[in-house]
Length: 417
Ligand SMILES: C[S@@+](CC[C@H](N)C(=O)[O-])C[C@H]1O[C@@H](n2cnc3c(N)ncnc32)[C@H](O)[C@@H]1O
Image 1 (cartoon, rainbow, N blue to C red):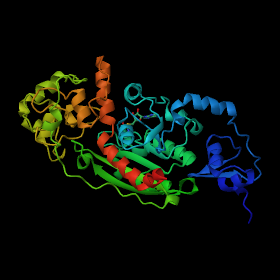
Image 2 (tube, helix red, strand yellow):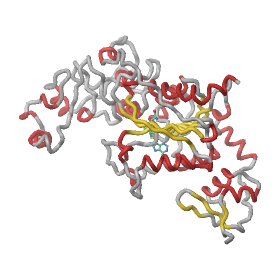
Image 3 (tube, helix red, strand yellow):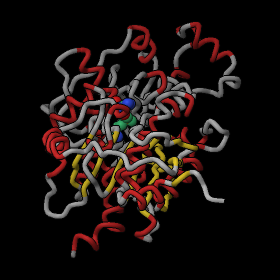
Image 4 (cartoon, rainbow, N blue to C red):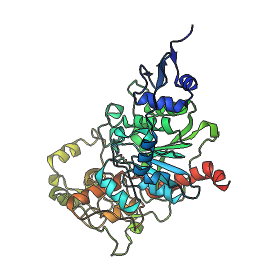
């Protein structure tokens, strides 16, 4: 039986425009009667060709707004960066030879650091960014917000509106279809269920494997930053998808030997480095850490000195699964994960021998930001914000390792041509 509906591909053939353009117009509500079932669009058969709102003037305007779009230097692969934060991932990709054409983050603290060190960033909420505002790119990266999937967060997963920001990545990928996509997220994503009960990882793999009618060969892996030259045990999951028509299956880089990653090494630095300022601890936290020796934790604090909340946990450690609050790593260990909240209770943020948080520069070093990468510390509000943006970042050297592997496996041949 003849269907009353057209797929975007069939409509594209009928109207003489690309499938991707039809999908973009559907998303923008510019095709009357188009309906979306799961991720697929259907268009009533007798719908007239839509009037494309992309006039020449609009194009000119976009190219002015996105000055960085068009600058493409000596054949470097062009990077579209979503959820860019203060730029940890982006700096790693830049060091590996990619050229950013567009970056975006709606957080003003992240933007301030990004602009100071890396350049222009679009500050809009991604929900209000039209795909046409984003230039074409060869690779798209997205460390979409991790709170909904994080063990430290509420774990509402995809039911939390931030979890659905993943869908924004799909919308932009579908419109741009770059050769490579990279997602980064917390370990908790691996055990998150999608609304329909499927594992979120499977949903991501399936979505990407068919997107845009071409799809991506996707691999994902849980990596520990310390295996890639970062002085920090930080586990994050990475997805790398390569467009199927390139016929490449990405192989993650080999683990490296853990050389010179101890805290002692990180803390050896010239006294006059910028951002050597720390966010003061609360009186309660200060009182507690005075009892904790180098390499210890809250378990070293005498019972009677603990707040009632902690005493209750201490009374039944089995029930609470023996949490390791207030960890103070020793100088001969590799530091634990630096988190955005930077709270001593659940993060390795206390200096090994001094009763204070690490300074901004110290955590920046643990996240492998170079010493000439500058943070903003002129007000108490800025200081706390810097802990957040640094804790949110992908360690620069981890990003660089992944980016170099992508460059080698996907783009190297192209550049030589
Ligand atoms: C995990 S951080 C990304 C860190 C970044 N990859 C790096 O290496 O520095 C996620 C970022 O997403 C941004 N973000 C969250 N929701 C957003 C939205 N709706 N629009 C734009 N940015 C958003 C946050 O401000 C945050 O900086």
